[in-house]
Every structure is written in structure tokens, then in C-alpha cells.
Image (cartoon, rainbow, N blue to C red; front, side, top):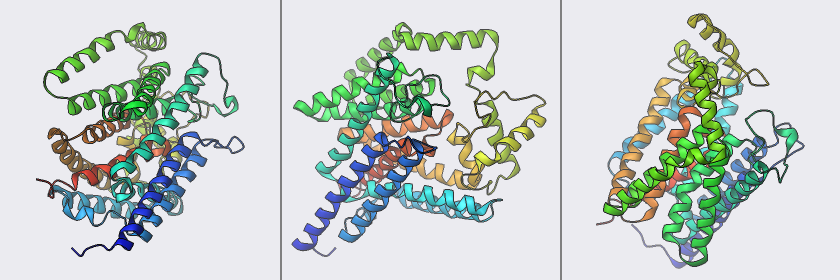
Length: 436
């Protein structure tokens, strides 16, 4: 490999630093930006900020030569297969859009997803190497802390935000994220990040990370989201398992289970559990799964009707009603839908929505590539060489659990940190061959 001259190194470092600042600003904007004059006050502006940040950071890296290509040449053996599977999934997604019933809309959704996916190579680049990773971590925790504090104030009745924008959900405690479910998931993703920062930082930085961890935990508990609680539990347990060892691990995890036993005494959690108990006793299965039966059945019907290429990226919203009706005819019973709009824009399960839109082969290829990446990360975490591998493993575990009954990949506020985590995982695993 040819030596890098001082001027080229300086240019690369500058572009990497600017890209890190750009990503950090984008994360903060995604969490805090709101446009109350727009019909979609939250999602549209956050998606725009995410796209702008991803594109600008990519351009900076390409201009400065600080991109991921060189570092990824030393990836561990399974990763070439990972890239082949991801490339196959991407090609099949393009074919899905080309042969979709509404190709123009499908390609528009694919374009949006592709821009957001630029955060993966950005995360795998030198931009976030070394001390610069502190910038996006700090921005993410700061933005989440503002949202969590605002949500807790809303829950206490001490703050009112964007009442006119809330059209669904159990409570108006979504702060600047817009929905208490999204907020719970962002907080759940932030918990292992904050825990890792507490373990790695010193002084005031540790205190700040500890405060972020506390408000994130409180926000998940206050917002009564079972998906958020499950995702938080999964991420926290994975972090403790991967980040600790021996007797300390056993004692800490036992302490977490003891703490979990006290959750029914938290008023918001107790109220939600009481609702679940009533739903179980009365056999109200629709209410028990928050009326997700309709969108789940619609997604399953879409998969049954077009298993190879799906209906095209972004097609679920337009296909929900006809596919749900077809599912009802097949099941011989109605599927209750109690949203104010009477329809669903997402399947409330990325595990179902992805194959429904782009087909089983493409979804399977992406899933297999993710499995290989997680296997490489797991090997890294078992070597106990630092807290970052444990944090990344916990963040991705949180996202996977959330994807079962929610849609973290469909919203920039949750997709952006997950995609950056995938990129950082690639970067971390690329060192395996070069390190002893």
C-alpha cells in the first residue's frame, strides 16, 4: 500500500472531521426538527434532514479520500459473502420497483431508502474513527435527552407540545419525535449507547452519559410501550452480557431481573400491565396486540400474492385495504382496525413489511447479510477488547426486537442510528485480520 503524504493525510483528516460534524448535526436535527406548518409535521422534516446529512457526509468523504473502501479490504472471511448478499438484495429491490404495479411510486420510495442507506458507508468510514465517534454519540444522547425530558414533562402535565399534530397513540408524550412509540424506541436504542459511554468516559462526560441513561430509562417506562420495554430489555441484557464477564456479569444481570420485578410498581407500567391482564382475561386478542392483526394479515397476504418481487418499495400503504379485505375473506372473519384514519401506512412489523414490499428473496438476502455481520460482531464482542462491540451488538439487538412488532426502518429517527451502527460494525470487524 503506497504511503500517504502529509498533504493527503491532512485533507483526509479534515474531510473526516467535517463528515463527523455533519453526521452529528444530522442526528441532532433528526431528533429535534419539527415543522408544525406541514401536514406531516415530524416525519417529512426529519427525513429531509437525514437525507441531507447522509449525502453531504458522503460527498465530504469522497472528496477527501476518507471513505470506507480501503479499511473494508481487510474484512473477515464471511464479509465478502455479506456484501454479495447485500448486493443481491439491492438488485432484487430494484427489480421489485421496476415490476411493481406502481413503478414510479416504488422508485421514489427506493430513492429515499437509498439516500438513507448512505449512512452505512459513512459509519464504516474514517469519519467516525478514534475520538471523532464521540461527536455523533454525544449528539444522539443530547437530542434524546431533550426529547425524554420533554416527554416526562408532558406525562406530568407540565408541558404541552404540538397537540394538533397528534392523531394516534395512547398519550400525547411524543415530544419532538411526534409519537410516544417512536420515542420509546429511540430511548431504547440510546440506553446501551449511554451505558457504554458511562463505562468508557470519565469525569463530566460520565456524569452526562449517566444523566442521559437515567432519562432514557424513565422515558421508556413512562410511555407504556410494550415494544419499547421489550426492546429496551433485550438491548440492556445483551450489553451486560457482552460488555461484562464472569461474576460481575452474573451479579449485574441478576440485579436487572430483580429490578424488573419492581416494574409493576411504576404507575405507568402498572396501568399498561393492567390493560394487558384485562385483555387476556376477556380474550380480546385484537386489543392485546394493539390491533396489529389487520396490518400483519395484509402484509402476509401481500407476500402470498407476490412472493418473489413483492408489490414494490413503499407499497404497503396503498395495498393495505385491498390486502386486508382479501385476508378477511381468507380467514372468514373481520380484522378490527381502530385507528382514526381506518388504515395503516406501515405493517407494524418490518419483518413482514420488507418481504411484502420487495419480495422474499430480497428480504432473505438482506437478513442473511445481517446474520453474517452479527456473527462477526459477536466474535469481536467475545474477545472483550472494549465496550464498542458490546454497545453495537446491543443496539442492533434492540432494533431487531423492535422490528418484530414495530417499524424502526421506516422512520429516519430510528433508522439513522441503526444504519450508522451497521456501518460502525463493519468498520470494527474490518480490524480482525490486521490485529493479532
